[in-house]
Length: 132
Image (cartoon, rainbow, N blue to C red):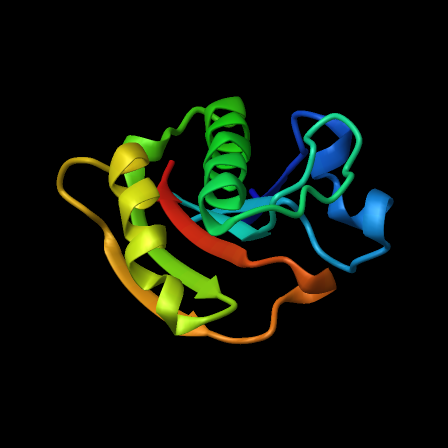
């Protein structure tokens, strides 16, 4: 019997949230033809060091990390089907959108945006589902 889900190993040490931060989670899981990525923060993919910055710089770092993670398991940013975006302040919504459009320019996926307090004082977190 084959497993209904497969844990995706992080393509670089900094994206291993369990090892770097002690979180009880996988970087990504493949199931039912989809890849479910854990909420991605602006971190250095080599070291896991948090990269605090502006909404623009953090969002760019997150998309670069997502690109690395998705491509490592045969998917891509073009195959994203849903995004849950968290930003620290609703006033930054348009800033988030400007960067978002650079990485997801065509046929945007389903998306929800919340404003909330994000871990470690970061400004953005993206939770993504992509087609495998």
